[in-house]
Amino acid sequence: MLNLTLIKQGKFQPKRSEVSNPFSIIRAFALLFEDQLASKKIKFKLNENIYGNIMAVQAFKKMGILLDIDLYKQILFNVFTNACKFNKQEGIIKMNFQVF
Image 1 (tube, one colour):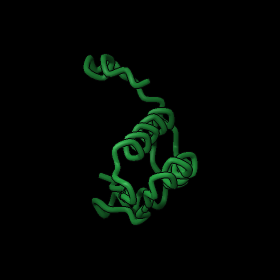
Image 2 (tube, helix red, strand yellow):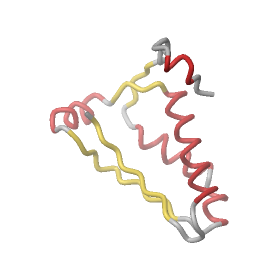
Image 3 (cartoon, rainbow, N blue to C red):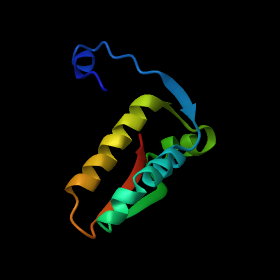
């Protein structure tokens, strides 16, 4: 679980790893939640176009990004859990990716 106390105190040290395709992790989470999404007929749409500063986008496409994979997965888990829990019947989940 994310330790908010460490973040507030400025003591949180992410474990950064190079990730060339963060979309693959998102798609894997969508598959994990496939049954919950289907039970409420929720559609999932992942926009794999990357938005943001043109230099950052070009760097991302060449090198990937640095992510704390465990934190990224925890955030995705929370997003999908809440989206399934609080979305309406036949709702939609849309995800976009922006780099700075």
